[in-house]
Length: 139
Ligand SMILES: CC(C)(COP(=O)(O)OP(=O)(O)OC[C@H]1O[C@@H](n2cnc3c(N)ncnc32)[C@H](O)[C@@H]1OP(=O)(O)O)[C@@H](O)C(=O)NCCC(=O)NCCS
Image (tube, rainbow, N blue to C red; front, side, top):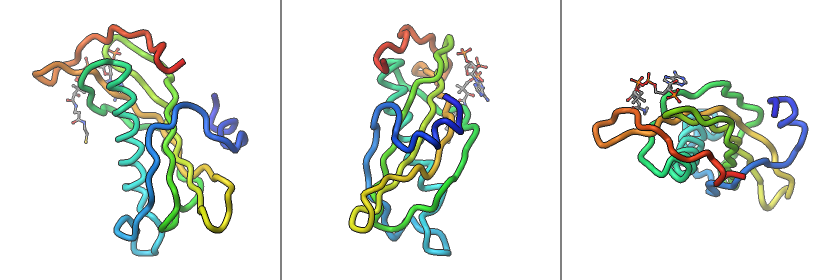
């Protein structure tokens, strides 16, 4: 699905992989949530999903097409959703969205960030390992 379509849908696509709360310690100097914290949550959620698909250890090799659409505020509930885009020989790419809900003020979710994360399945020596799965777990 294209980035524009995703934003227009106004509802999350794919598996919910993390649900957490943005805390005061995660803010930038302006008081909004630091983008690096959000990306780390997305990476954590993506890694959980990638491990389940690859049935192996994984490492992040690339993060592309990062877009920050809206700020996240302290106390917001942040939901991370993952969609499998493709599986290669040793790598897989997930489209990951972060949505925020300010629970007591508005029930409406807003898309705050999206990016494509590529993970490589690795062996005990940290070398790329062939992924046997066809990704049906995500269907
Ligand atoms: C991930 C790593 C093991 C890959 O090793 P490598 O020798 O580059 O492996 P290869 O060139 O054989 O690539 C392996 C796969 O990754 C893909 N890949 C490599 N670099 C990529 C990039 N920049 N973007 C997208 N895919 C990439 C390759 O296309 C290949 O996929 P495929 O087998 O599905 O076709 C190695 O680069 C590494 O250890 N990187 C550090 C990872 C890390 O520390 N991550 C945490 C960051 S905080």
